[in-house]
Amino acid sequence: MSISIDHVSKQFGSFQALDDVSLEIASGELVALLGPSGCGKTTLLRIIAGLESADAGSIYFSGVDATGVHPRERNVGFVFQHYALFRHMTVFDNVAFGLRMRPRASRPSDAQIKDKVHQLLDLVQLDWLGDRYPAQLSGGQRQRIALARALAVEPQVLLLDEPFGALDAKVRKELRRWLRRLHDELHVSSVFVTHDQEEALEVSDRVVLMNRGRIEQVGTPQAVWEQPASPFVFSFLGQVNRLQGHIEDGSLRIGQGHARVACPEWNQAARQQAGYAFVRPYELELRLLVAPDADAAGWIKGQVLRVLAAGPLVRLEIAPQDAAIVPQGEVLEVHLGLQEYAAKPLRDADLVLLRPRGGRVFLA
Image (cartoon, rainbow, N blue to C red; front, side):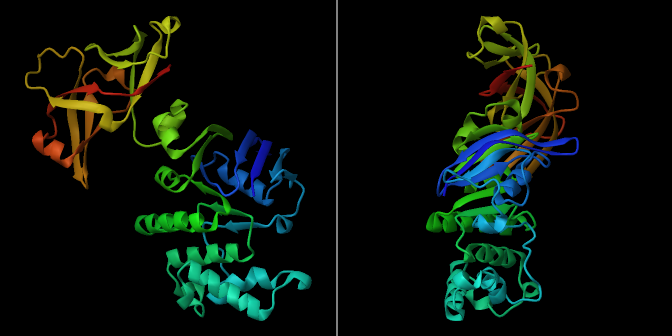
């Protein structure tokens, strides 16, 4: 089932939660709504489900207007962050609940319900826990049971609100891989809300970046990472350095050493205009400054503040000598692989030279 969100707006008092949002979700697609807290992603999910009503705009399921349809009639499965399982019911009864609540005319027989529940528990790889209660399960197991319960009514749309937000990092990683495999098997049109960029990029077919009630960008995980449409998208998707300067001759000139980031997209009209480059930590080339007064043409001078060596990457925090090239209070972050760092080990207070190998320039 496809989902069409047509010019939806929602306001809570003076707070504009959604501001003229439109989005098309194809049948069988897995879409992530990604953004910071308060950006409107959960409100949009609840409007799709019918749990909130929009002030303006419409929701269509496969071309049929569902805006005024009761949530019970939308055939939507909803998975909450905190499971929302019935504590007094066994795992089996939790999954069977939606089937048993159907009107008598469409309610399956007890035998059919039993078969269906066992199929779903097998699907989520927890068939052996049917007689246990939620309190006897781990967080990851509870979330899989919540998903099985949502799937029991055979929804045409599956909505997940921060489904792994209450779990620890290791379990989250395992479950999102499992969710992707499950989706590839079932092909249910799915929308999930998250503020975890790694989760969105790893699991979804497309990512919808939201900010202040509006959609900033929609695209595949690769597209939004490699071609961010705005400074917000660039800064939200991973660690980034902001370098300030002025545009001239097709590049942004940074600081007194005249380090540059190419920006051929800005024509002569932008010449001498203030701008800033977003540069990822792995896009900064680094070398040791042997003599403090050495020529640094094309480089940025800096001093190592901190070396964090943990895991496969070594992170270096560096204060530029020219403080004006970064926003007040910010430092530069550089990522080196372990082998690269071993070839040029650095310590706190070492003087270094930095040069951007890439980046994206925006007008200030």
